[in-house]
Length: 206
Image (cartoon, rainbow, N blue to C red):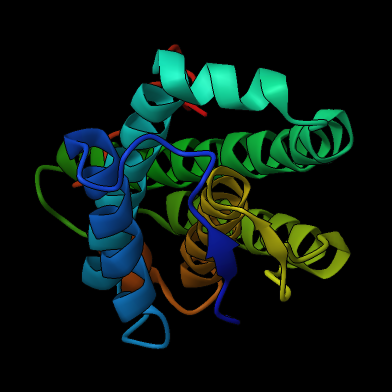
């Protein structure tokens, strides 16, 4: 990921706790780029991404930030940012659906084993599970193939814009890593599904 060259004149003071928190979260995610893509690593990145978005939300609510945005001719990049955010929302929703489907297929197989009092699942149950896995893998591969990556280029922009664009880029990167886990094998998927509980009635925050 390319480094951003940004100016901080449109942000609150860099000593402000909220600004420091956002910068710390971005630093953690930068340092995790290119590291392990194991289930444990992806879960840690998802937690960092959640904390980063909470910090960004707090930053955008600050009066000094809103005043700076009103003073600047920011309509063009704001519209672009909103357009890219919609793509991130789509990716987040798709990842949540995949998690839910995977969790459901595993639970169905576990229920079959319990019904058989701990004995091996029936051939029909195993076939149903494998069919579900193949369907999910096909969905993920097709989505990744058609999905446009959000890459950070070199920008000479205000610091607030740079932070928002970098946050979006990390969101795409982490969620894509999450999806890739599901086409690498059952063991990795199971490790991720259960610690990372799916609540379909709770939307992702941006």
